[in-house]
Image (cartoon, rainbow, N blue to C red; front, side):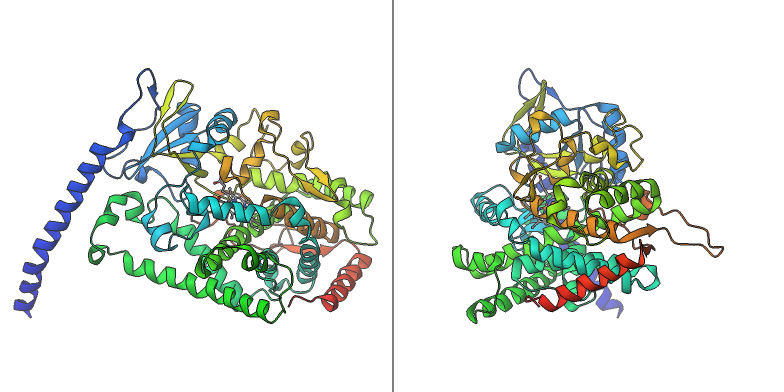
Length: 542
Ligand code: HEM
């Protein structure tokens, strides 16, 4: 035994030593060749806190880093920079800087940080949201935009309405332990995007498809936290021989999991198209029109599910929590609904332009809880300049959404949930009943639109998402009073809206919590049951 242990040590020592030497040489070479170190003449370096060698400021960031990022913004102003591993991150902290850098110079700020693990390995270089700015991404982007224009989105309205009817019915009849509503919201958002992408619904909250999709989403959230994979923070490590890449085996397993999920759905769709069973959907159009190969088509479709499911459900699940804590906001929403819709039918698309308070509720939620804790992350492909500061090629430019959204000058009492603050700004324009959000950056009227990103990377699903948020929230608020849970003495317990109420990871996902849904009247309860019974009979997409 001893001899064996001794032999192993003797064998391991030179390879460990060799590995360390390789790493040091690669770090040295990377820092020598880095363009980030060269500042253009006459310009200043973006200020920022000092960090440690190699890891930079990584250890100064907590798992939900919005607080540290906010403090640095207060200290350094419109821009600050930090190092995460060998990569420089320039944080953009004001609406003006965001417009100038991320919108106007978007031709050079629309790439993504090279991520040899999260994108190349785990995503097989087919994770849309993480793809760098290259011809492949441009092609995927154009294809997606074409299939998600406001007018194409109108062809999905009927399905979104159907899912919203099931959503309120499920809240009414199946809110087990006062927590089950959370899974019903996830089902609602995921079923909408599945039906839009593949043409079939997800009728139950705990089906295999939902489990599989949320497994992938959870892994994406963890994979894309800075520092989650050492080779994403120190990309030169990806040049080690594959046998020495200790993260590789696990990464390939994650990739295979996605192949099984996305290609499983894709083949199911192909069969349905062949047998002419498939209704109109994104995937069917993709098969008909796109020159992409099979696996790319499968991953592009899967990317929509990845991008569209949790973002939508998390906005609703956060909004419900704020609404329960703020009965006065609910009262305002109920007054609007009673005046516009009445109590004899639930809200429809025809009411959308007349219910600005409902829209304000989801916009205020997105302000308080934007979907990413690290901000919106782009990557520069050219040296840039902003107010005398040099922003080099090859750095992350990150929009510090939390800091911008909690600016007390722009949003007085920023911690408070006050949807009415969005009533003063122009809402969406309505095109044939559905809203078309015209984000006119110049008008400066919608700083909160940054919840959907910026420049060439702006979320292509935003029109679609706004429709889901509207129809879901309008029906929920029309049907129920949303109440906090009760303690043992029958007293309401306020819900935790602090960071502690949210999960770790890159994305802003509330931890499951308790809520009560009280129908606003016996007649409304009957209508909820009747509308779902009628819709269920008419459904053709199961
Ligand atoms: C409330 C719901 C949603 C929010 C808050 C949201 C937000 C975002 C954000 C912040 C980005 C990154 C933008 C950037 O880098 O500048 C993004 C990208 C993306 N979103 Fe959404 N999104 C939502 C719903 C959806 C839906 C429903 C879909 C699909 C129908 C979708 C599809 C995509 C895609 C494909 C990308 C990647 C675009 C690219 O990298 O070029 N999103 N979204």
